[in-house]
Length: 175
Image (cartoon, rainbow, N blue to C red):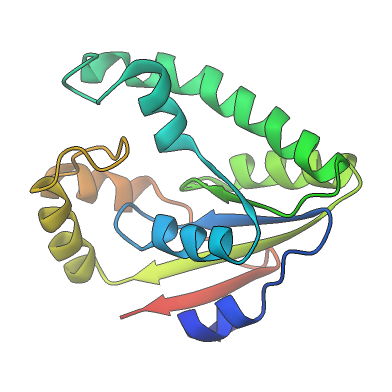
């Protein structure tokens, strides 16, 4: 089902034990959407911000080559935090790309195992829009740990991204 950003936001209330999984390529608006949910009462967990808090800025405070090794412990921590929040009856939004079905399924299972419910929100944007947004982001390098994504990296992201299909997702077309 495809909806607008406004409709998607209106459909989400901070109900106890609800976990919203944000899904989309860099620049699609996941953090902006997640921050709107945070303003509405959700606990927001951001993989980029937690990585930045622990290790600093990508390519400046740690080498780009170290990114995968540094990211994995943050993913494990985030999955545990989500389960803890759900068990505590909090509504939580997970600000991460969820680029693979396997990653999404692992988080869904964690939420369900903790007694919660999940919603998968997929922000779909055209590559040209993503390029413009990411170019603007590169001009502001201290944006809460966001990785500076150039056109070549975006092309790699788009090739490896597994869009959700038939996973119970709500697709939001970003314009």
